[in-house]
Amino acid sequence: MGCYKNKSRELSVLESVTMNITTEISPDKDYVEVHATEADKEQFPEGGKGWLVVFGCTCCSLMSFGMTNSYGVFQTHYETVLFSDVPSIKLSIIGASQASICYLVTSMTLPLIYAFGIRQVLLLGCSLMMVAMFGLSTTHQGQLWKCYLFQAVMFSIGMGLVFAAILFSPIEWFKRRRAMALGISMSGVAVGGIIWPIIFKNMIKHNSFNWTVRTIAFLYVPLSIGAVILVPQELEPRFIHKAETVSNSRWCIEKIKNLPSTYRTSFKNWIRQTTDMRYDSMLLSNILGMFGSYPAIFYLDYFATLIAPNATFTNYAVTIYNLFGGPGRVLPGIIGDKIGRCNCLIAFLLVLSISIFTMWIPCIKYQILPLYAVFVCIFGLCVAPFYSLFPACFTQIFGTQGSEARLGLFLFTSFPGPLLGCVIAGSFIPKGTSSAETVIHAYYKLTIYSGVVMMACALVLLGVRLSITKRLLRFV
Image 1: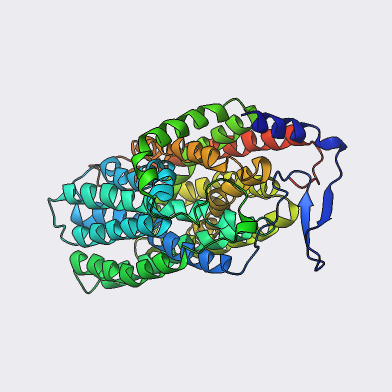
Image 2: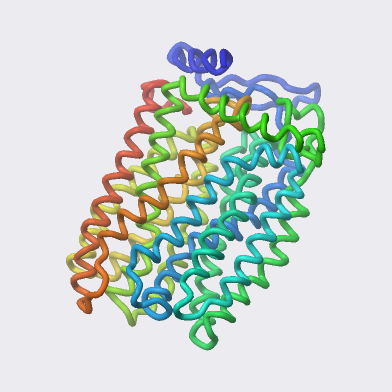
């Protein structure tokens, strides 16, 4: 606990520290750039097998949040075809539960990885997702319970086990390129968000819902094999800077027996983290972002259907959102490695919240499809860094030592946001009315709610950044 307080004190005197420090790290004239606001000073691989880990994590994110980000097309099909008599709020809970349960499970997964090994945990997670998709493919009208069981619960548990690899593996291989590595790992979310809606919307026109979902389930097989093979890569001893690593985790009977005490220790470490006000403020910012972003993501597609049901754009609204989410995960990571991850994230969050007020709200009144199309592009580009850069911000400010506890609590506090946020937003959308204008007008409440909460998210994070240094050009 003392080391966390010392790091916090070091950050509080950054005004008197030079902006960049360059230190020699090997006799072969290899250099690594160290910024004053970065807690880690050790040497990291910065590539090699680390890129295999990153590509394996991309497969994981494609299968996990790539599918969750595509839930908008499922919800539209449920609302208009399969469960047209079911209130919107009950359907949005399915997609929101995916994210919420995933965050909850991921926060508990690290001890399982250390006990059973990263490969075994990945194998279990991928298997659960495949079984869930095949189970969902048996759904017919009047069987909403199958969507809750397979899509909301079973798929989400598997996703949580897999998502832990995306968060914890790349940060052990990269420091200088950490934000970029995490961005590429998360880029599978955008790729999945592009290909899954295209497959779904094109197949559903000529095939049943059952065979459409079944086809997607078969595609999970090669992706799962790629993830299980690529992610588990062994770190060399000179790059190991903590007692246990995800990359070198192996099946260990002793650790399996000690899992209850390991979880008790983890929970105690979570509580210790809350003594740092900067960390608490970053948690608050993340919680607000979770409450504000998911309702907008899940209702983008439905709004396009309402204002232009026959337009070509309507069929690809979710795809276009995710298409811009790809660069939105990678480019901010590259920029963040140059100017500071917090600086970069704050800028994108401010643009995101402003665009909701200045572009989406006018679309409700005037129903201007071209303006809405531009907004969807900007929204996809700007919301993506919220998910890819936040972990990099934590490890930049606080370091990798103790990162498991910090990211564990970060994930645990993330789980209520998607579910409760979508419940709140779903309550704004009326059901049982034949008037599209009434439903469109209800989007005023949804957009104002989302815009205000995302603006608050950005401002809280800005407060954390200014508490470190008020110099706007400083790397933070």
